Length: 402
Ligand SMILES: [Zn+2]
Ligand SMILES: [Zn+2]
View 1 (cartoon, helix red, strand yellow):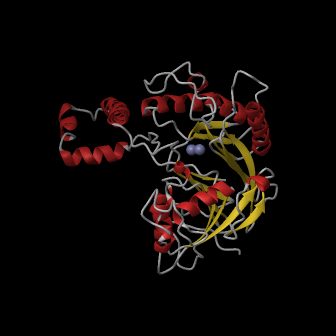
View 2 (cartoon, protein in one colour; view 1 turned 90 degrees about the vertical axis):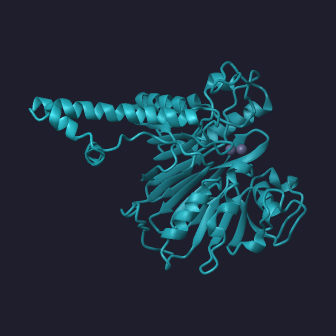
View 3 (tube, protein in one colour; view 1 turned 180 degrees about the horizontal axis):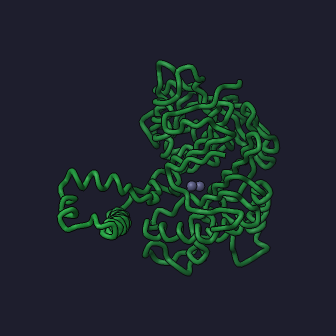
């Protein structure tokens, strides 16, 4: 159905093709900034503010306005507030602490959500507050895999509990992903199994949303599936999914022990590739079947990334950390082969090879301090400065229009 583009108060411009909002970019577990992170942030704000103020005062002195008396007048609380507003706030990045949740709004008025990490709570609060009453409250949720950091947000999401104007939530994912959600909440089968309430006291009976599942089935699933639940539809992995005028093409990535999906999204002439929890494996034995599976997955990913407008990738480690040559955040070095996560160097190479216009490295390692993230982010921006691709660390709150 063709609907007018959304225009929330925070983003009044009409959507050209896709509007992508990062609600959660943290990897593995939620991570609030530590005291040291906050101190580092405050230090940077103080330094940037002093820089602005001293340059401003120097200019005033040059103009003959910066007499000691005039400067002392600035030292009252009200004058300081006004002076600070004149100077403006330095724009420093913040990374958020919520796990994976990315919203994609389309120019046709559809809303797609990628993963239901803890960032889904903030997304939901915004959706409930800002979606117009006339708008069908339908969400299309694409799930990469069943791990807790990618589904933790569901029981905290107000979109599940709106009674006056309930949401319809269409979920797309692997058999294991849908089964994990059904085991925990009974949202598809409307039955309470033995593992309901393992994670939370809630189940489908307290949720007013209408849930529908679509299993994205790959070739190897046919024999591996224990049961054929009638609780959801089945969709062939090789086929694209159409949401209005938007095409979503799933593909398999390498996440070690479990199946994980990436998604290529096209609307008009804009493309977005969402790929988290993918490891380009760097093992010692090139003939290891896991290495081959990982390389094949990388080839699929690269094919989807060519000339993409926006790419979101897992870059939890640097290669030396992955290989166990270097610790993270002062921790002991630890080999991380088959932990299912990617290296920043591989994302850079992918972005360069595929000419991804804007590439974002997410699934941040929880142990990595903000001071280090600031430095990596600055280095990444410098590396892609003036090039035909751009790369930076993902930050919660980022909104990208393509
Ligand atoms: Zn994850
Ligand atoms: Zn995972």
